Structures are given as structure tokens and as C-alpha cells.
Image (cartoon, rainbow, N blue to C red):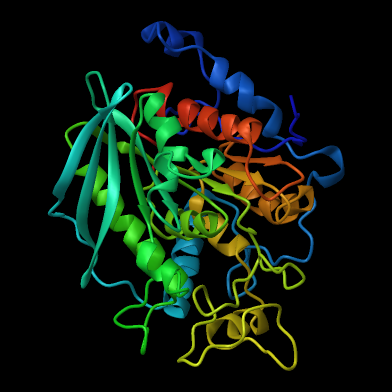
Length: 392
């Protein structure tokens, strides 16, 4: 069998308990629970020796504007508020979230050990989406995960099997909600534009995060779901989407980002945050798709961010102390530990370890081995304990 080349990652220990490792007492309380998920993810919770402590040229999120440094958890609370406020100002303010969603069930059918509902709901104030809600058999409330991609069908098993996150998680006892930008992807505009594509006031990638936050409320409103145990996952385009959603909306208990390009990298054509459907929105006609050149420059917010020295590790910082996993491929190699080490340091100040994880594979596409770590990650942080998740 083809083996995955995975290098250590920094995984978190217990998102849901006050401890940083599973204990015998936790396992005894639930005979069906074993330490197997932890054993699977444990090799990926520490940077390789050559990357330990290295933070590259990324500015420290621990620095206040006046040059002072965060040293305590109370300091971090203030600094976190500063970072969130600054990024919300740059990205554009989300419209009010839809906290009492009206969900229409279009079709239901039994599949394996779960029921699949095709549903429709408002994911922005002026646009509905159609997705799939997979509810496993057995008594709840269950942990749950939102899955995001170009379409909602892929994650439920219609398409590439290594992107079928919703299906695989439902088989493992998670409620899964699969959503995607079907119409926008068909039109090659990919993202969400609010209030309109002619005059978007919110960066499209941030607006996707808003839609995912509304999807969180759909799950949280279900009696089968434990609202304190809802995560999010996506690959590539979906990885960017999941990253922005989980960083900007702190009710996601944890997150897995599959090879999105976790920081800006203008040498990588797939780490293309400068495109109009991500952070480079500008009125049409849009720039020609591809790398930034003198003849084909970036427009909109993206060049403003880079000129000001911003990078996405500042958003990663907003996750602390919530756990996250980078399922790295061709776009997120071991050198990405440099930005991730900033999040590790923040968690250390907060008194937590094992909250940041990364695996590495040669290819962009996920595979069975890399996905197994994703599923084990969610099993460990959303299933092995029953206590509420820690709050920031």
C-alpha cells in the first residue's frame, strides 16, 4: 500500500477537558472509548527538530501596537480582541448571523448507519443554499462537523473518495453538514459576494466564513447535536474556507485544514489568496487568473494586506486555545511550522500544549492515510470527552 510521508505535527491534547492528555478515568467513563485516536495523532504534535522554535520572518501576534509583549492570559485576551477587530475592519463586517435558522428538508433516505437529509436554508441574509445533513443512528447528542467544498455532493461520497469527509465522519458517529458553492463554482466565481457581486462589501473568503457560521447554527439547532462539539473541515478551496471560518467564528470547537496554503506565498499558484474570489476582490472585469506579475497585478484587499505586513498566522492565533490540524500537502510542507510556532507559543502562555498539529504528504490531494489522521483528530477532540470545550 502506498505510504503517506507524514512529519510530526503539533496536536493539541484535550480541547474538551481541562487536561492536555486523555486519562484512564476519562476512558473508564466511556467503555467504548479507547486511546487509539490519540495514539494516531500523537506523532504529529511536535515540530521536527529542525523547525522547533523557528518563527521565520512572521511578525509576532503577541506584540501590541505600542511594542509591548503579551506575557499573561489577560494580556492575550486584549491582544486577541485587537487582532480580531483589525481583521474584521480589513475584511469587512459580516451581516448579522442567522441564529434561528429555518431549515427545509427536501429529501431523506437511509444510508448505512445514518440518515441523509437534503436540506435548504439561508446561509446569507439574501441567499439560500442546498446541502446534506447526515445524522448517525443511535442516541445523541452527537459531535458534529461542517464540511465545505466546491459542491456539497463530494463530501457525501459522490465524487473523489478522498474528499468524502462528511460520509466518513457520519460512519464514525458524527452528525455532518456538507455545504458547497455549487452555482458560484459553475460560474467560476467560486465564493460568496455580499451584498452583490457587483459591489461586495465583505471579502469573499470572509463571507464564506460567515456562511459556515450560519451552518454552525443549523447544526447547533438540531436536538441530535451537542453544540459545544462542532468542528469544521475542508480541502484546498475548502481548506481556505474552513480556516477563515474557524478563525473568525470562535464557536467552532476545532478545525482541520487540508492543504489550503496556510500563509501567503506568491510563488505558489495554488496559494492564490490574491484572486478576486478570495482576498483580491475588485469590480469586474477581473484580473486574469494566475500568479501576480507586473502585467497581471493583484487588486483589492490583498496587496494592502501584504504591504502592511499582515499574514494569515495572525488569524491562526485567534484559534488559541482551540485545537487545529493542518493536513499539509504540496502547498503546506514542513516549513509551515514557522508560522505555526507562533500559535504554539500563544497556547504556552495560556497554559496549554498539544493544540496545534500538522501532517505532511508530498501531493496536494488527500489520501487514506492523511484523512485517517483528520478523523482521529476529530474523534479525539470531539468524541473522547464529554465535557464542554474550553472557551477563549
